[in-house]
Image (tube, rainbow, N blue to C red; front, side):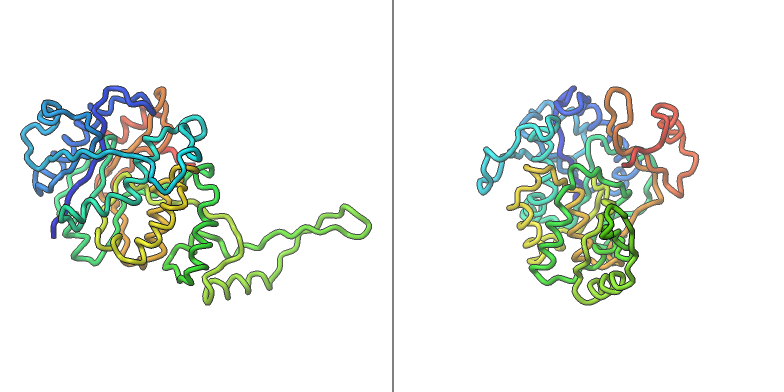
Length: 340
């Protein structure tokens, strides 16, 4: 086993998206990671950056911790997409950097790490903070128990950056004649659809609950994996923390799925995030017993803007009750998490 921990970071005191002190947050994230975990296990840590960490900055961040290595990377819109179709600002808010990040964790990271000889990786962001002591090797735990994908939290993705995604996934499932493992569980196939019709006397609206539709849904789910159109619940792995086996992502069928969505350009055109692509891929190709949720330690990943909790939050570990950082977080922001 050759695992690593991955960051994608900026050496700036004010990032362009949220105006945050990314450099200081990265150092805090690393300090907590070492204090609560990596002082004991000494995993390689790869910090990917776009050339903004010079040698002196790397030395300052490393603080003598030899496991930390810096990897320069340069992003660009893929050549198979037409640049004129890509908005510079998606919805007038999210720049290309945000979407480059999403493609990095959806598509390219697996090839890069595989070529470097790694077979497992754990993702951390510069604003990901581990607040509990973890006294077991996370990678060995995953491997020993046969897990392929691990996560800490589930959040409901906003509707706007998911428009069209589940329909595109359904189209792929149908065309490839796939039998998803658990992806269809995110759709309420038993809920009847309201049909509206009008009497000949006009404008009398009635709602019908049709038993046959339930039967058809069941048959589709069991035999064709093709449900009637319903609303996706948009519950996704909050993958700013994740642990996964790289060999799973390098499988031919998984690579075909990831490559298909990469060529669609949804990340750049519609801001289909790495959250939703990971969720779909894992739930299509991995059985439930190969996916694990860590819930024993306290984890924080919060998007703060203008002093308000805009997204994410702090997730208290079941073995770490009454951690003062949770109380301080709630006192500061009024709640533990923000979830659409």
